[in-house]
Length: 302
Image 1: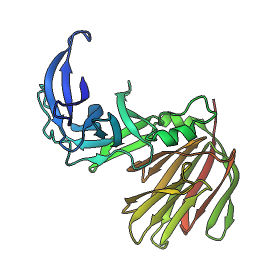
Image 2: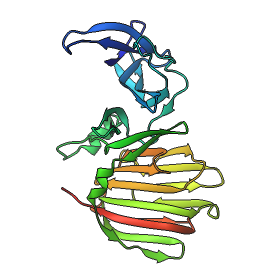
Image 3: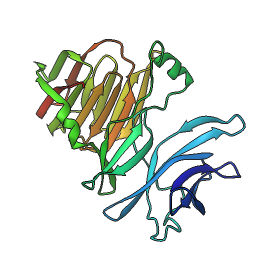
Image 4: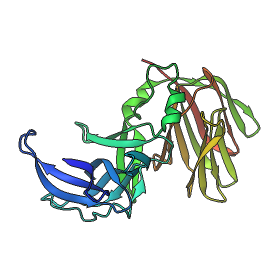
């Protein structure tokens, strides 16, 4: 069992414990550590095709006040020795990547299904106290989990894609109105699945998908992706900008107050809570030129 911890010096680490019966546990010792972060939470180790992957969530903390300053979900490629004595790379401060590029993703944990798939579920919240107070006003609950995602490892990338069973929830197809290079979907349910496969985005300098509450943009000249949402605290716009060398396809799963966006088959993923302003949405896709397909479906509620 891996446990995230804080060491006596106020810096984070991951310790390894073992047990023969699940009741009595022995400490094996420190498996990995950080000198930058004050705490590590939610570690998880698994292997895909003999590649070792360590998930962990480091935190900057104000130790005196015992408060979180910021936190993030990371992963690094490192192999756990067969005797569980050590990791090949035990430095948590280097050679890592973010698991999810959205606003709200933390504490991912994985499991193996009977048919051998590695499935990940994360906690869809990184809200501060002010965000939580406004978001939960007059609501019986606030936080949620991500959809289950199958995890693969290809060409140095941690691929995440919705598990195949979720596609059984797709309902009827919705037709959009074409206006030049724009495709507009009006008055649609908040629960929808959008899939866009691009034939040729080299002609377009910018591709934009947006509603009144959020937008995603790809800039082919700068090779960047941008995701923005309306802030429910300041009424301004919050932005996530990331490198995106190519843009071949995008898949968006929208729920009443959340978005999960999968780019290029899950090579990049963005998970975010969205503050709902209306019961229905209008969605616009513009600037992409030629599409191989644009498919919008309702998501069936249970």
